[in-house]
Length: 66
Image (cartoon, rainbow, N blue to C red; front, side):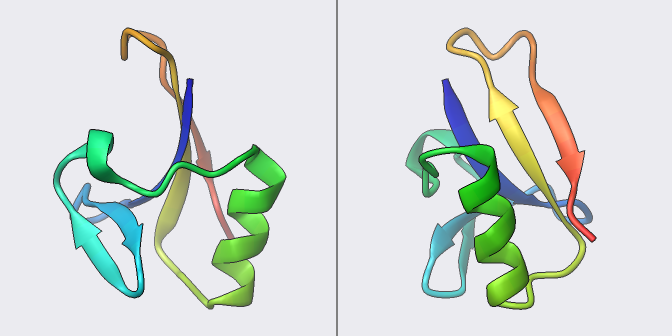
């Protein structure tokens, strides 16, 4: 399972250091959902969602970050 941050408009994933990429496999993988949300809030990332991605990618859970 991966916990990722995705730009809701561009669908790019957060890699770190203000870098956004297309590949979920190369994105920054957070330890847990609260850590991902806190990171977004602390760094003022807006228009993003936290993605909880299953191992096979079939059952993603998407959480909007406000």
